[in-house]
Length: 98
Image 1 (cartoon, rainbow, N blue to C red):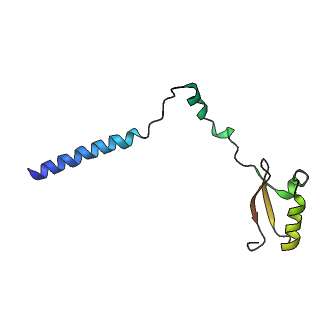
Image 2: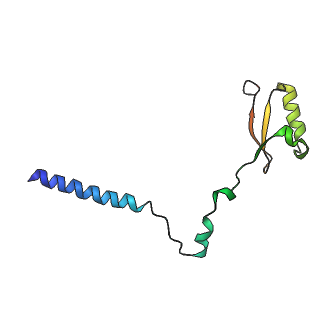
């Protein structure tokens, strides 16, 4: 008798836990027009457009700093910039951390 009560309690708690966890994975229904603005198509989002600094030399206002960096540490360094923000996203190729 005691074992059947334990099994019943375990099954009941398992069903309740599954229902609670399962209800957390439901998409929210929009209740206002602002809720509809939160969804964007993935192909419309552009986070970074990375380009080699040498290929856009005329667009980089501080290219002289990049050239100075390479002159001091060696010309093998490659610097990749985000075109939108103009910040380095990857610096590498020189063999060690500068």
